[in-house]
Every structure is written in C-alpha cells, then in structure tokens.
Image 1: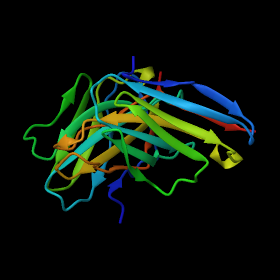
Image 2: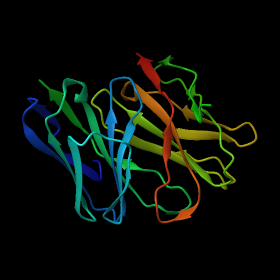
Image 3: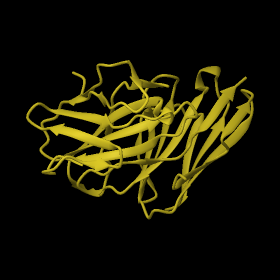
Image 4: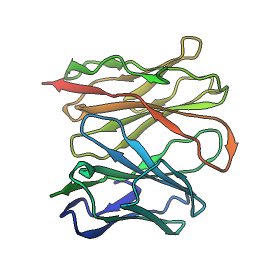
Length: 114
Length: 118
C-alpha cells in the first residue's frame, strides 16, 4: 500500500466545473509536489510546497490552484479546465534535507475533461 | 543536453530470466541521488531503489539491484528472476545537490517499457 494517498482515483468533469484533488501523507515529509503526466511520458512538475509554503510554480495556468492546509495535506483546485488538461495527476512527498532523497508518489488521479 | 538518458524505449524478457534496464546521467554536482521507479498501467509510481553518489556499494532491494558505475555515469537497474507482474514502465530519475531545506529538482528519463513473456 502506498504511503501517499490521493483521492479521487478517477475524475470526469466538464470545462465549467470546479473540483478538487486531494493528497495526504503521514511520513513526516515537509516537501510535497504536484505532477502532471501524459500517456507514455515522464511526470512533469507543476508545484512544490516546502514547509507548507509554495516554493515552485512551473508556470502552471491559473485554472490550477494549489493549497497546502497543513504539513500532511495537499490540494489541487481545478476550475475551467481545458480538454488538454486531461492527464494523470500525481502527488508526491519527500524529505528535502541533506543528501538527495527519493520522492514517494501516490496512486494518482486520472482526470478526464469533457 | 539530457541529464538522464534511457536508450531502450521497450524491452522483452522471458519469465524467470534477469533483465538490465539502462540509465546514464549527466551532472557536475558531487552530491546526487539516483532512483528507479516502476509504473504499471494502473498509474501508480512505485519507488524501487535508491543510490546515493557517495555510496560505496551498489544498492539492492530484493530482486532489484542497481549497477552503479560512477566513472561511466551509469546506473542500470537489474531485475532478477522476472515475473509477469514486472511488466510496466520503468523510469530512472536523479536529484542533484545537498541542501538544507528547499527543493532539489528531480529529472526523469523518458522511460523503458518492460514486457515479461510467459
């Protein structure tokens, strides 16, 4: 079982809908990430939170809005998405002190935009 | 220049045989970590194995081992005794830099799709 939990596993939404993706980890990690992954491609970084503060936004459109309510939770709020936003969205966490450490990923949310 | 190169888009292996997935990397940072992830068709990204740049010995985790050749900048994944459940996409990844706090960017390779044949 993964130690990073993402909900929902699947989401279908229209272009005018508002929805949220949720991510939770209980490994005591202080860095959390959102990635977008298209089929047969590696994950692409979207956002990084470090100690509950947004530290990296990889020029993501404003229709994606991240939120980190506490050190264990990470949300991604979605509004007015486009069909090209259909993808697998992965959450990850890691310990970012000292020597480079691996990121641990959730199972992902498969998002389809109609 | 690519920081992580996986030259095998797809590979086949017979069940119970061993297979090596290639990965080369490029960095000038003396402190880095190398990782392999497995991604089945269901989508979850499963962390398999980690090798730190200062580690003297090759990493092993069960049937997975990492053949780390620092001078050649290669970090190949060896899967012994392949099983049908090993069929998946495999990504090699690297993080650079020793920092106290802050973000250490991860670079992923393009992946190798492994198919295990019964």
